[in-house]
Length: 441
Image (cartoon, rainbow, N blue to C red; front, side, top):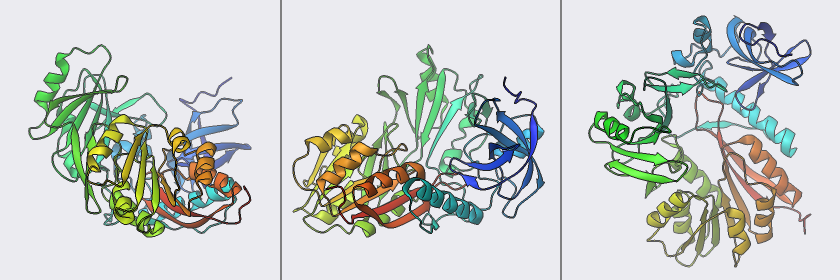
């Protein structure tokens, strides 16, 4: 038997924050993960997942009976759970902390990060979450990348959290104004399943069209002709990896810490406008690369960290760049062609480390959200670097990997956590690990 989540509402007292944008409450002994709440609040919440046999339920706040300090009016009506509930709708996902003032958001994120370290790595550490460099006081207009679905009728839309429901949007307040100024909401995107937009540091925005299955080939031309002049337009086939130029370039130009980078199509780049500079500064300050050192940059992408690492290692040093994505690896070759001390390998990190011959003085890794995993951690340990730098976008996977490192005798030396995703539950961190007492040898 499953509870009818379309009509079931319960009253809850909200407890601690949980990783993933939820807050913990209890209802008749059962854990309920609640979104759009704050610790200490008394709320009415609509159950969204509530199978009778489930170990926990999920719910969205529909009414605040007793608000907590730190609650503010949400800046984005489509993402406001309270306004959406009053209309019988779900809120847009992606701004789940928008009802919380920025100072409180950062305190909550610090608590979440500390709890993940404590639970998964058995590390007790006081955490401070730092804003990005040059962050706006309201925490808005930081996304240089935005992704939209296309609703029936061809208008841009976004999904509700954990739902197939599409909600049309007329503005994206977290996106930089260069994206909003394109007025893509006025364009008929029929024939396209998704639209991705990049507003680079240098040059014109790139609009990437992902065709819908069975769409007429002429649809892309029609859409391209309706888009503003002066921007680049391309189509992207994720299954085949095919990128086709429709107008302008298929890549954008980015800059960070004195280097220029080419990023093609859907290639990865840090989305906060200040994130590249913020993270490069943290990495270089934390690792303190010496001339002549041998460095590995794992999950290296287009080379954001590889270029400054090569500068620091100098011509007598060596930097190994490893990236699985063929497109990103091609970008890295173009971005680093003038650095002969850089060796670029396209392929899986575990295979690259298995085949690598030579010493490594420092290893930097910036893995995807799932983390590096036990095998890669073991390979890094076997290379015996003096230090490991770990850039992470997920506190849980970082804490799990940290536990693997600790089992091999490594210790957490320094840790910085950055609020590079204001008004969401996400955060970024950079840690330096050093070799402690060698228990794994």
